[in-house]
Image 1 (tube, rainbow, N blue to C red):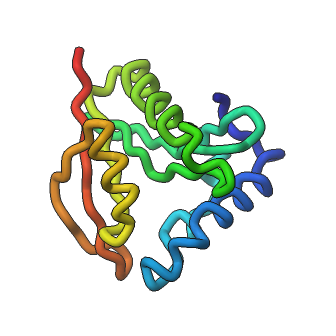
Image 2: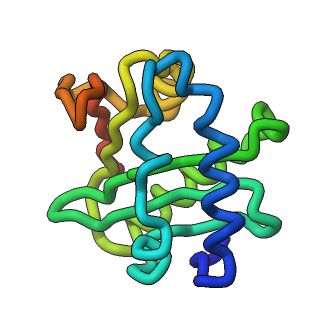
Length: 144
């Protein structure tokens, strides 16, 4: 894993596009990660990529938690554990930053993602509307 740099921006945007396009029909609109400003996120040091750009995770430190804003894996590589490795990396980063928890949100219609996060120890903490979408809020407390 490494931080993305400006030279990765086109590949990052392509990866996000490819990863989230199948969800448009499920959600009924473009998922929020497709609307993000990746130039700004990369410049802020928020985008972490795998070697080979097979996956990425966007992490935003907050007061009391590390926000997992986006996880994307190349669709042809689903089922190979890349997403789980990205989530494990997020836990390592939270610990490195001294943050006691991680939080994330996902669309209520992304049932497979909700199930994956639950299997990783995330618990639902609420549901909210975000930019015309219904989101499930989830959180994982880290052991000391």
